[in-house]
Length: 144
Image (cartoon, rainbow, N blue to C red):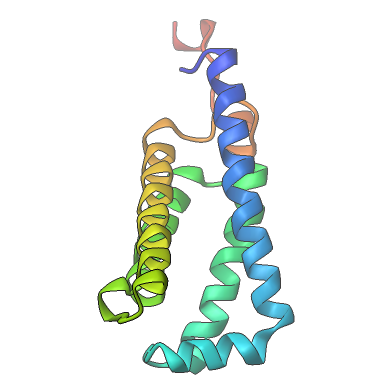
């Protein structure tokens, strides 16, 4: 069970993560052809399948984060997705230009940090300020 202050902090964390992914998903959708081209340039396999999956994961994942819906499994899915995008999209080990390599290194480790936040959501759950929290059974006399 979480304290009210804990639920508030978890809610803020969910919103902070949601903004990042909602924005990214919508931008990918609005510039879909460019996004597909970027995936091709990175050598991502099965781009015609990967691109719509990425847009869906980011957009629906962002919405679910805001709502606090199915947060424990979503946290695991988003953590795996974020690590995969770090490896495929921020491959600093393949960059020769030192400035670009440094930039990619920073983005890689930011993604790993974000994945850590998602793993924490797997453990903490959505908190009370959420669909999951509203659906959770409350303590009381029902257990007597």
